[in-house]
Image 1 (cartoon, rainbow, N blue to C red):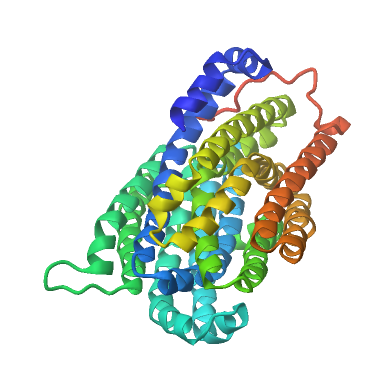
Image 2 (image 1 turned 135 degrees about the vertical axis):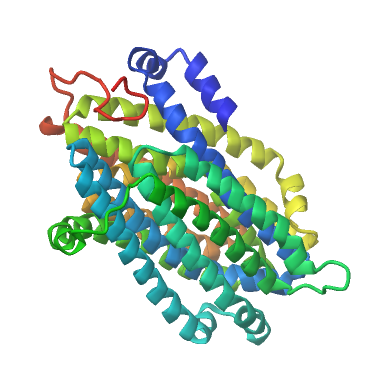
Amino acid sequence: MGWLLWLYLSTSGGRAIKIASQHGLGKTLWQQTWPMAIGVLALLGFQLVDSAFIARLGTAPLAAQSFTFPLSFLIIGVQVGMGIAIAALISRTLGAGENERAKRLGSLVLMMGSGVIALLALLLGLFQNVIFTQLGADETTLGYINRYWWPQLLAAWLGALLYFVYSVFRANGDTQLPGKMMVLSSAVNLALDPLLIFGWGPWEGLGLPGAAWATTIAFSTGLAITGRRLILRQWLRVSGLYQEARVSSRPFMHIAGPAMIGQLMPPLAAMLAIAVVASQGEIHVAAWGLASRLETVSLMVILAMTMSLPPWLGRCYGAGDWGQIHRLMRLALKVAVVWQLMLGILLALAAPWVAAALTSEKAVQDALILLIRFLLPSYAALGICMLVVSAGNALGWPLRAMLLSAARLFICYLPCIWLGSVLGGWSGIAMGAAVGNVLAGLTAWWVLRSILSRPKRKPGPTSSGEYPAGEPGSPG
């Protein structure tokens, strides 16, 4: 990611590079995004490698893991929604100069977030058989899921808590430590995966549950290190939490409520999508699961910017600098489109080799190649939608961001997949998913232009383009 982003910002003759040279936006975007991009690549990369290891166990274990993805995304949706609220509130508070309040907010949301995710994980564990049966899992697949799901829920809870800690770091302007810790966690997971899944010497390994236990140990390692750093930097406060909860609960839910609903919609859509895919057979479920992992890895730059941009945008919003916001969004969207188109075309051309690297099953390879060729180039449009939704939560229109997420999934994406399955089977599903992504990107672009063109959000004559005080990369 790094060399391409640098190349685009350094050699483009368009307006984006003029902005970067005049205001330092390109340099600061690079500084804020690259640590998170490397971290996201490491974090999501080990999940893709997890699936590649599991594929060696056979099609049935891989299909079992694929059935758990929508529920794992459900947990991630809740944690990301809360993380968005954490980053937005703390960054706005810091932008207004209320440092002590920002520390109380950090403590409060860490406590609340861990409790909410623990409750959700418990419910998903207790009702697992009912849920997975409804999604189309047969008895053989359920046997694999039952051994895998509880340790995976523990890993998901630890991962959510670690994500909340990362959100506090990002809100305080530090994206480098979270990025480094994602890399470290990934390295621990990758080292443990072969040992715990396949065994070593007399140790037979745990099979599918071994992947979940490797992730649990990896997240525990990252949490121990970042938790200690968080305490040493004194970004938390225990005193005054009750009063802070009374004052901040309403603005927190104003952001977190729509954000969580918006983030919960993708898991719901994933459940409906995998139910459609399950009608095609176990092979196609396995291929869909691998494509889902590959999707998150290929979107690493977009995901990194959705984490690095909101705190920056929140400080600009708190300072009332709409000129800076306009320039930043233009640059971010241009970088996203250029990167995703180039990566998507490259991976589409290399689809047979990518599929062969992920699974040795020929039938699964053939199904996966079709998905890669249709879906990967369409992520340029999907990236636009993701960035606009992320910006909306930071810039004071979370409800519109939630509605945009709903439109992307339930008006653009799912209807196209269903229609594709009816008209063209597996090829129709792949084509329908790609068309849905393109429609979502066009809709997001139209929404962003409509909102930012309103008089109160246009760049004013007094917009200096300077960074708000305390912004990483700013002189202050």
